[in-house]
Amino acid sequence: MCQRKINRSLFLAALIAVTITTSCKNNGGGDHLPPKVMQKVLLDISIAESYSTVVKDSTHKQGGKNIDSLTAFYKDIFAHHHITEEQFSESLDWYKSNPTELDSMYTALLPIATKWQSALPIAVPKGGPAINVRP
Image (cartoon, rainbow, N blue to C red):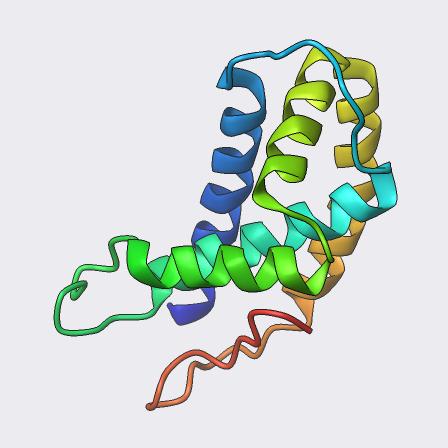
C-alpha cells in the first residue's frame, strides 16, 4: 500500500513537472542549462515534490504539499547544482520552446527515474519514508 502511494506520488510529481514545462510563459531565448544538468535538477525537483506529499505533519495530515518544505527543498536543489532560480526558470522556458530537446531530455530521464523508483523500499518505516531527497 505504501509503495503504491509512493509510486503514485512519483507519477504525480513527474506529471506536475511536465505541466509546468508546458504551461509556463515563454520568454523565447537566453542561455539554458545543458540537458544533463537540467535532467538532474528536474529529477531532484520531482523527488522533492513527491516527498512533500508523502510526509505528513500536523498541518498536512492528508498528504497535501508542504509549500514551506518545498521552498526549502528548491533552494537546496538550486544550491546543490550551483544554479539560481532565474537560471532554472530561463532554462525551463527554453526547453518549453524547444519541445524536441525537452522530449529527448525526458526520454533520457525516464530510465533513471524508473531505476530509482525500483530501488525504493517496499515498506515505509514508522518514523517516515525512507527517501533521501537528494542522493
